[in-house]
Length: 156
Image (cartoon, rainbow, N blue to C red):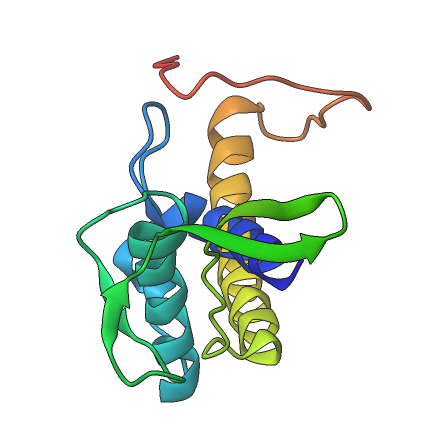
């Protein structure tokens, strides 16, 4: 389960920093952090998303800790068991796919990075709201309660 959770964390965390068709990625200022350790965590999460979780690259290899050999990162694993029974030889096959068990990412650092990004976003949101409402709402009037939609391409 750990690999599945780490994949989800890396992919979802990375979304605002990758290209998309409408908004595009966040500006580079959101990839700068007050603590160098948070920057390393941020970069590690993004590279993990790109190299391990969101894309399966058969050419990637890692050093196997138990065998001290370089092995492909993504492998099909087949275990074959033979057992002698009174009826004869019994053969069992188990098939699986190797999962990346990335433990180098510090989850509390991800939380701290998210909190720092959220603070920056809130500060920018405040200034953008001030500009939007000053331009769109006549002086002395207030927006009525409810949802108000503004198009990003609205020139008026």
